[in-house]
Image 1 (cartoon, rainbow over the protein chains, first blue to last red):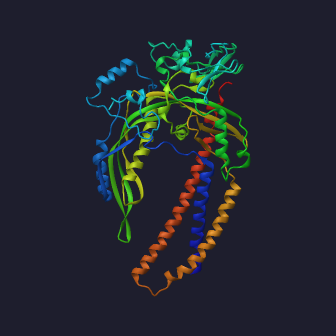
Image 2 (tube, rainbow over the protein chains, first blue to last red; image 1 turned 120 degrees about the horizontal axis):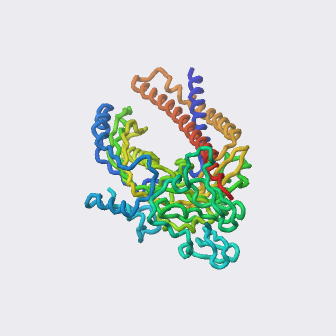
Image 3 (cartoon, rainbow over the protein chains, first blue to last red; image 1 turned 60 degrees about the vertical axis):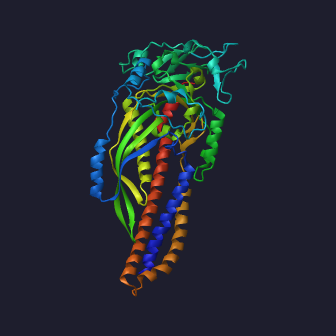
Length: 129
Length: 407
């Protein structure tokens, strides 16, 4: 009985570990460059406004019900229209409509080049939010 | 039209190594911003036009979706599709930029010039492929069918993402572990996320080419297109929003999971994502090399980031070697594990133990079984990931995106 059980566990463990080792080697060998930029690269800033930790499922879902609906945001662009550059007039109008004090300085961490000079494309869209 | 040499009127080609426009006939070199060309005079007052408006009525489905230009060098007919912005003449091989017919609003604002040359891109691809243990010998010594430098259109998006998530995780409570739930609600702001603006190229492929160092971008000058192929944007706001939402959700979930401490096996079980995209997006062209080779009758396309030289591909594998290794390593580990378990298991099965210790031994065995399942599932998931990557490399749409160009 013990021998059979030990054999069964050994078989599972042996082939489980082998499949993990071989698949990892295969991933390294044949799946080249399977990654993309991270939060730092694209100056992502995450802010958690509400948190709850270590609660039961019902409390977790209650948290979700309360805050999920409050967090929905949307824009007013025409979904079916082809993306295009805005005209100077549209840009001026957008800047006028932006709330006061909406300027957000950009985080340029992660870039080595151009630290002394913020390019124009970074500056331009700073007043939207 | 091609940008011509001031000295001999031969077409100029952009050289990534020198970052200059070079004339192959007389050897003259010019800075792209110094060259004056008629095509640079854009009609500032024009509104953005649909391809149909620019090129004529496209309602007739019986006609092929392509447009005919005349090569400025030899007068030959150049055929391009509705989204191509630069190409090469099939007769004389000279570069031709067909951008001049596109209004200012369809013209990119910024461009990241190629800094990796064609030869270097092929060398980088070969070096990356050579390292693979499971890569067949024919692929390691692949012969290049075609290598094309293509400027991909991107919209650099600024957006605000909001989400509330519930995360399920295992928390230790004494000797046991219990399932607990964690809520995270918040926002994610991103300033410069590049979103691929070409429908023909899959978002998955273009995302893998990242990251691009956007600080290397320069104001758009069509002379940078000389000698390369390029496409213009053909996506809608809905496409951009969906792509940005997917990418942002991935990052938000990752951050939320990392924010939950002292828990294991964490996973997001509920989320309510929404996004607000700034309509004032930055239109840019980013460089990529597309290298194709044939293996067992299938076209494979290796992508190389034209700036950083990052190589992206999923390569077919030596299945016999993989399965032999899997079985060999599996047998060796099974034999080793058998002796270990045979020596330790009788301790668990001996009857002279208290109920509490036998409970903890039972837990160890349960943990071992869970570990085995986790090892198998991780292994299978990794193999599926590799297969997906191979399918992307052998994707017919990507091959057509690259191949269906003149020259």
